[in-house]
Amino acid sequence: MTHTTADEELEGQAALYALGALDAEEARAFESHLAEGCAACEAELREFESVVSDLAFAAHAAEPPAGVRSRLLALVSEGPGHTTKGEETLPSSGGESGGESSGDGPNVAAPQTGGARDFLGVRAGEGEWRATADPGVSFKLLFADRERATVTTLVRMEPGARIRAHRHLGLEQCLVLEGDVRSGGIEMAAGDFNCSLPGSIHNELITDGGALLLIVAPERYETLEPRASAS
Image (tube, rainbow, N blue to C red; front, side):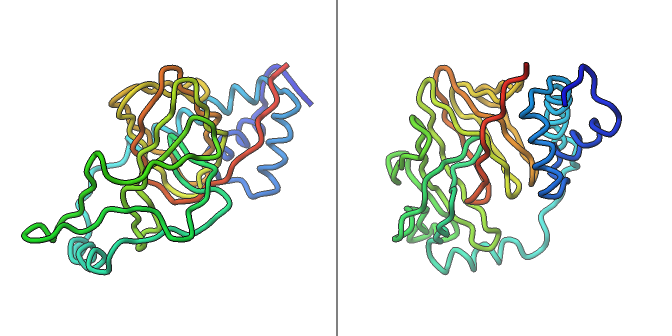
């Protein structure tokens, strides 16, 4: 069923879907409704997704909890972390990849020696760029935080590259370092930052001239089938 305006119930579903608050059955039903070509609900969803992406900027600055430094140092002393194999693994961010971690684990930042044992570092020429399942998209793992189950990655998109639509399984932070990238009606350029909340959905990410992204997010995410175009 399609219509020209969304009623109150469908507006509520669009808002909850954008927030990732619908259960699996309700989410599938709403996605099926969108796939029928409902332009009104698609427009409502785009507006709510834009609002959700801005929620991170409403949070007040907060001091880190006591003991964070000691826990970080303890984590560093254990050596480089590793990632877990999954159906879909980062990058995620603004960009995500469809590749899997290798069995030996990816290159991660190693502790500095001598008087710099409190720091981790990866030089520009260090680390390994790995291809993803999305053509023209590659990533370099910088750090794996086992305590928080997140990874920090650089994601490189060649001109014209696309990253498939996906649902975030946790909080994702993305900073555009170079180039351009867009998703739906949202366009980002160098210096722009986006925070995607758990359960939020990114439409297909596209770059025209190429992009370099810095992403901190869970390793895995859920890829989605392309939505049908509105009639």
